[in-house]
Image 1 (cartoon, helix red, strand yellow):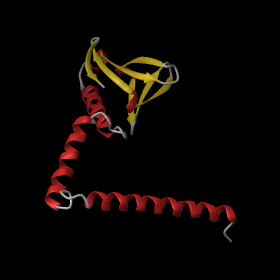
Image 2 (image 1 turned 90 degrees about the vertical axis):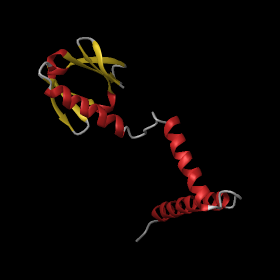
Image 3 (image 1 turned 180 degrees about the horizontal axis):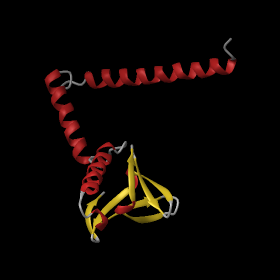
Amino acid sequence: MISMQDLKKYFWFVFGIMGVVFFWVGIWDGIGSLPYLSNPPISLAVGLLMFSVSKLIFKDADIFGGEEKKEVQKIIQKVRRHPKKHEFHIKYEDKIKNKEVILKFSKLDDVEKEFLVFLEKGKEIFVPLHRVTEITHKKKTHWKK
């Protein structure tokens, strides 16, 4: 049997979904009724222009950090294969200590999904890839976020 609390929850889910649909219909019909944008080729050109301009303006606004993580992963794999990987260091932002921490790349034990695993004094240190800010080689920047 469905409780009153579950019924209220489902009501608000449906209410929210209807709100999204009405919002979309308003945008679709509102913009579609503008004189020039009702022409499909012009609407397509304006949409492509908006996409290209937004990518130029918001190139650092990758909210999920997908591109950045891939770039860091590539650099880390490259450095792991480097014959002098002991000369590299990784800087990362430690939110708990509220400071940047530097670790020797030679202490890197493993890369697990989106984490770097360092072995430091018998303890494992897990560093999320999105927290890596810089990779240095002989105190010179090799890669920077």
